[in-house]
Length: 113
Length: 112
Image (spheres, each protein chain N blue to C red):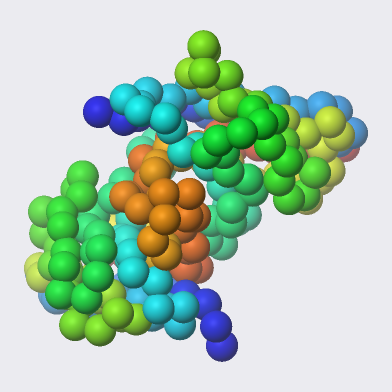
């Protein structure tokens, strides 16, 4: 199916474990983004990528790692999960163009216990 | 630095009443402005966007927004709210080829 998909939709993990959230888009969009959504904070940018093998930090990158070896995939890894990383994570993609909109995945609800 | 302020955290309106959600932005150049809606448990869906031209833009689901440069505002409106409009609404500023900056959102509740 065309679109942007995130997996898993729900994840519970323990403090200190490594966890990877997957994001896959079928449009060949150049840009991909990871946001986290927390009550009272709205959406905050974690990392983004302008193309394969090009990534850059956003507002809240600490504790996260990203890679983009293929245009369609943009996984987000929590190297050692902490309770403060309990959140809803959204992946988005966007084509080039200043008026381009971002298309969002359904989100991954991550709970760190 | 660019920023977006949505002054209202939560708004409750009666079904059939009109709606206006406020958005103020700070941006150094010509802004690219977006309104997204998030239904419970879902991702964000674009309602409308503005980047040039007519300052009144029409979107999906009967929504419209007006860009006012002098007030740095991009308020979202709907003449008659339906119960299915209950959701979280986010204003964002671009441009689209850089990461959007989002406001903290306004939660809309609709009562009978």
